[in-house]
Length: 139
Image 1 (cartoon, rainbow, N blue to C red):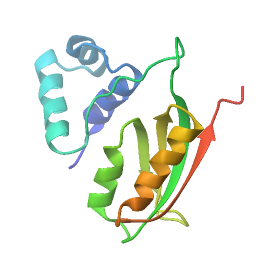
Image 2 (image 1 turned 90 degrees about the horizontal axis):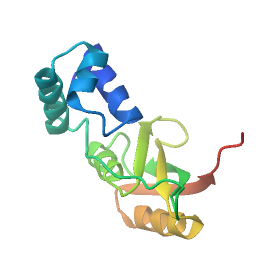
Image 3 (image 1 turned 60 degrees about the horizontal axis):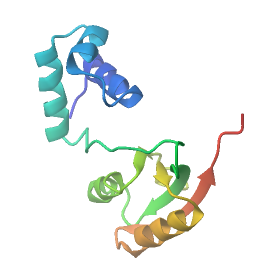
Image 4 (image 1 turned 120 degrees about the vertical axis):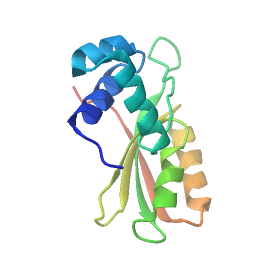
């Protein structure tokens, strides 16, 4: 699916604040509320937007972030990328095509949760190998 600058601007606004109203996004992007809704719907149907998630903050037992490096069993396997993109807690996924095919950032409850998630990923026959690492802001 081809994205234009307006689509990318809408995605950036949703990434900053997923609860932003369509009218507010429209003001930022320079489109009507209805045009924003139509573009979001098109991106959902085209698989660009896979869903919306609530990520709990630090007010309680909020999530930590982790990075997972993945090698696919078959290079550039769209089904594997879609499956990885639907994992709970998924934040970002990049196909990098280097030593590792994919790098993804994900929200997890802690190291044990990350370990269980890596085991789940490795059980999928579309995946060759995976390695997860907890990440925390240094400053």
